[in-house]
Length: 478
Ligand code: ADP
Ligand code: GLC
View 1 (tube, rainbow, N blue to C red):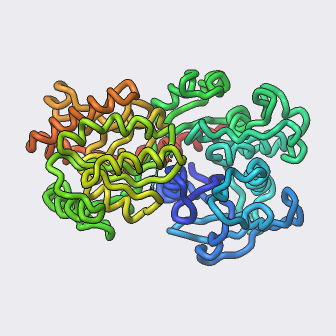
View 2: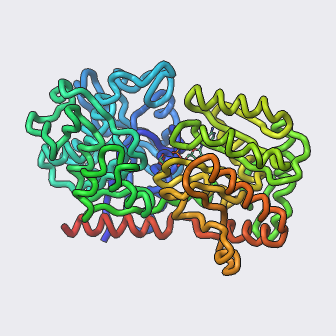
View 3: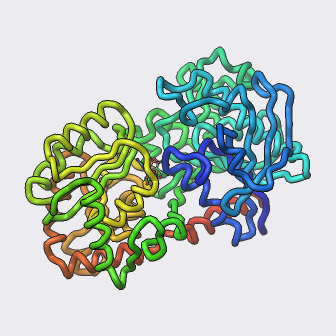
């Protein structure tokens, strides 16, 4: 069996990206196509999006979508089909998808409710060319109202709600219920109501036929208060329809043997990685680094454990290691990274900003990648690190714990270790993890073997795409 899926999201590579959500939404259509599932991505037409679509044509229009005219443009990018929601009053804005730099847009609930409403409408009536999805797959709070509109509209098309990050819940004041095109009856504990407000994510979790998240471990964590961030009860109540499906990384985009941004190398000829390391040191203006050269490519936020880094890396740097940081985020975290750079000139290199090509050069040149996250639904950078022979040093949470096999006497003896996993998530454990890393690095034979194991690990989409396909099939069978 196979069919049509409408994927609803606020980000999608290669059109717009602020984090891993975009990587995943952009990879799923290509991963599902060989299994017979045609997935289209419904995305806001932020400035510049329409210009990137090939064979673009209008397939749906409305005079009034949450306060202004709107149309849906179908086009192609990177081998898959995109439905871009063109609504100037909602999406023709400078800045990022959610904010112009001076705080979130105040009408974000309405903006993404509109996106979700159009998803439900396409499921109800189809587009102008007769394409109608068999399944609606909503991602994060921005797609969360889609399952709710399907439910309250009695559309009869099953839906999947995928949680990529529960920290963003899409909260709106109760007075916006009507403006969000929700019926009065929806404002109840088994509907969209959440501590007196409206939550788009809760709406999706309650109304969807199935719930997924992006790693098995995070699926368990989400039912506990430390990780569920208030929604643990809602998710636990639906435990029977919850599953964790691990993200993959795109093998075509992330391949050290054929990456145009780097000097290519492979697991067999790993010595080639040294040239990337030397270039990276030069690019960041660092001197020779005798110990491991670690990288950090991350949003600079509390989730990512950035506050643990200065104290956690001090001894590591004092003993001859180096660190290159690429990231942007919260002002305090950017300031902490600047202070670290100033404290270790020639040892710590820093780029504040977002730079895709530089991130590739960093994975290629780095010996290790740090991911000290407090919570991590899946995480992609540890997988990119594995693929490029940059040994991951990760906190024992969520997808990090599911994708990295921590070095221990037993896992090393068994030839299984692919990285360092530390616990608890604090600066001391990070420092201990880095000490372990430096010891492993000093044993060249063992280090090389560990790098090669990571590079050969299966990190692609194959197995996970099959699980999504099985989920869709189950929903269609009812
Ligand atoms: P999250 O989505 O929580 O930020 P992930 O690890 O799932 O975390 O995905 C982050 C993605 O964004 C990866 O593709 C990573 O390489 C990329 N990334 C993060 N920060 C930067 C940056 N400053 N420059 C380039 N790429 C970045
Ligand atoms: C979120 C999570 C990250 C995950 C990504 C893609 O941004 O923070 O862990 O990898 O979504 O699913």
